[in-house]
Image (cartoon, rainbow, N blue to C red; front, side, top):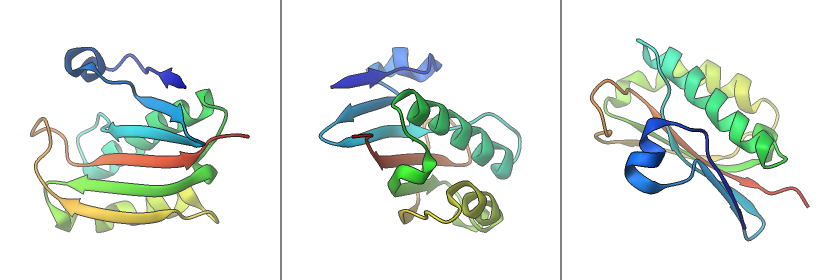
Length: 118
């Protein structure tokens, strides 16, 4: 098992790893990104996730499952072009949930499960 840390403030305060490689998968924790708009935060969260997957030896193309959490479901649609571009020809299974996030500044949180490299 391998644990990957990004150095984000919540990892140390809450006590979790950004990603864990185990059982043939890379489990990436729910990730938020900085920015004013939901689209800026979506791009930033995907960049953090992509970095964790690269450290695990993979990429977004290896994603098999993604869950999106948004406080306002109406803000999900502006993210669709960003998500289509990020996952390109390898779209994962996906779920979107409307819920509260850890800080009211955050407008989207993204959680990914990807295949680990063999």
